[in-house]
Image 1 (cartoon, protein in one colour):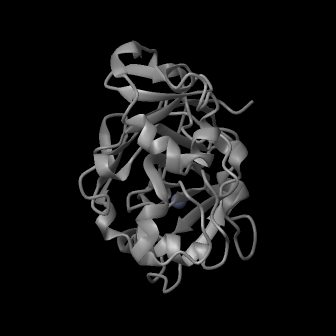
Image 2 (image 1 turned 45 degrees about the horizontal axis):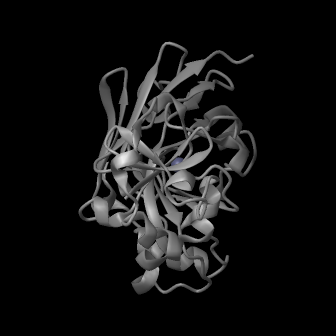
Length: 280
Ligand code: ZN
């Protein structure tokens, strides 16, 4: 199942058509995309009974972030060995975790205002929690995942490196720095959810390309380790880290400009199309 946020309303996507959840359920679910996550364990079985015949064509530019107001957003640094190496670090032995403050979230067709001249890209698989939990064992982690989506962890490298030691969360939380979407896709839709091709295409050039199977801490391990400390709540997001190929490790470094068109893609899930405007 593919669940999206169309202009603030939860919809089920069927190809290029959308079925409004509140209308199709006679008011039982929706319209707020957050409320379907709160009731995930009875909402999900309902989705397979919804009649897709009343789905209608829609304008993809009206899609918002599939989870617009998560309680918690976890983000993991250096979770792919080649990216840890390009950043100058050995692979971590424990997940390195920061947050993207939820006000940075935006949808899959956003124009994002650049915060300065050193804004970089990081495509990431984003996990959406369905049923929450504390101390979730890795073996049961997928049962707590509502679905997967594509995320861009846009990062202002100047702000990120200002402190000593540097701290990441604010530099990655300017408005629009968390494009997500195009939909929340349930794990059964994507083949092997632990082995998905993930890539960034900048102006038609592939700059990041890997498999999520390369992650040091896979989804199950991240859910277990995070929930061992923080109780996870419905709709929480986990940005699971980016593969190699970010701009600030290129020679010479390359950063996003207003001329750029950024496509973030995960096979079986979809694409984000992000463009940029000048800082005000
Ligand atoms: Zn990241």
